Image 1 (tube, rainbow over the protein chains, first blue to last red):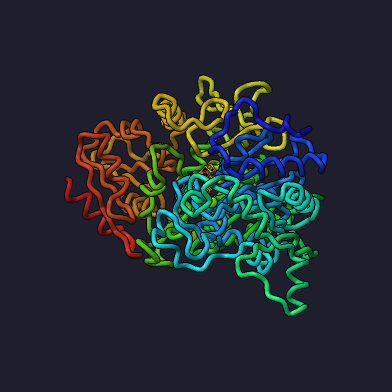
Image 2 (cartoon, rainbow over the protein chains, first blue to last red):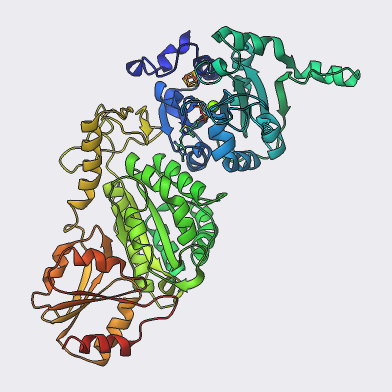
Length: 262
Length: 360
Ligand SMILES: Cc1ncc(C[n+]2csc(CCOP(=O)(O)OP(=O)(O)O)c2C)c(N)n1
Ligand code: SF4
Ligand SMILES: [Mg+2]
């Protein structure tokens, strides 16, 4: 791993629980950044609040760990004021889609040149497992003790509808694919959104019948279905399983973007 | 020129190159003027989706080294509170303008007030200190905006221009100087810890993109900038320093005007009520009526009160129920009499004159 010198070694060990999926996403992201050949001094990581948002603190670049939900608004200021900086945002499902939902749709609409990696564990990890906007219908959390009665957000559909140039979804099982898509996102001017479904054994898995860490990773593997395959099934009039997780690059386009390096 | 335009011109003269905000009466002219002017000087104007995003974008821009500002009024000011605390905790220089209107809530969008003076000082959670200036003329909208930028840069704190609607919308002739004083934020010495402060309690600024590799967080952090949120002594030391770097400079940066220092009955003002007091003094030339007018309101310099050794009462006309009067009361043994007049009605010279006579 050539990118290990991007890690802030003097801050280790990290706060993540054993078996947490966030570390995988950090690795994939740094690997993608490394492929870009970017220098540390021209790269900035920004985040909000949550387990996922702690990631920038473990990376050796300039980084801004902001307030809950607001990372994209801070990142917008950084990127607009200095488009020469490469700005990458780490966020969580609660951070991005609940308290930060408005900033999310507007950052997509502006198509500002950021790469946003959302670690979607379908739960509020940091605060002990409350329901989030992506908690699946019927899933258990500390605030949905009888099963969530709210329909969940599809973050990628949201980003696509709001105007992001690049939208992709993978999981912590799909390390190579996730890395490749983050790399694509870094290359594409405009707003790139990569959703990474991750296991949170501590606050999601153990309440939702994933007794072992690997049970949920296995679930990602068996339930993931490539977007191309989903389209083929649809075209052939065949059913797509209701619990399928649509994977792959979902949108790639060239809308006018803001804050692109001059 | 209109007060709000003078504020925007002051910001441009001070080198402001980033404005992020959201429109709200009676501050909108500042955003509009910046939208027209900033692109012409290589700056960035961005209308954000709300005031939370406005102040967030300003803080982000500031970390790239830009002088950055936002402008708002009551409802937007309330939305900014969490990120104001973030700017304090991360020691981010930034300027916030509040053209105050009647509250609470949507209140009186077009009427003047001074009712956010305590919110500006205490509105975000936790203990902290900030700098706030209050202009009483269009000329001061220009001058004190420049000053707000310089103080924000020097102390690495949010600096507020707490104007009221009257001053924001008033039109007066002003003089714009060829150049204005400019203080730079002190850069971080190479190799130094990013949040270690020297004698002045203000650490050097590790601008993003310069290779410092700094981690900036709103969590309680050590001198490396690393989160450490469970040590009582570390937290106490950090918060005490953040407060002390501003409060210990309060006499140094004090900015006020004195009229008739031998007076026994003394008005204390800031912002537009000062104009009415000046009218009273103009109509009744009488050395027994004094006037202390604060241009810099926070940190409050209690030494200013000593300019009036013979004072037997302080009369405090404000467009609120007595917000700064409370602060003055803490620092003196003589009576402090709030003279509230708000809702958009102004103090009249006659009523202020009457207030003086009650103390004769
Ligand atoms: C304004 C505000 N409200 C609430 C919180 C408490 N809080 C901290 S993290 C969090 C949820 C984080 O969930 P998510 O973004 O999904 O991150 P995860 O921990 O799951 O990675 C909440 C509600 C806060 N810090 N700030
Ligand atoms: S609570 Fe969940 S998301 Fe947070 S570190 Fe533990 S496993 Fe990871
Ligand atoms: Mg989460």
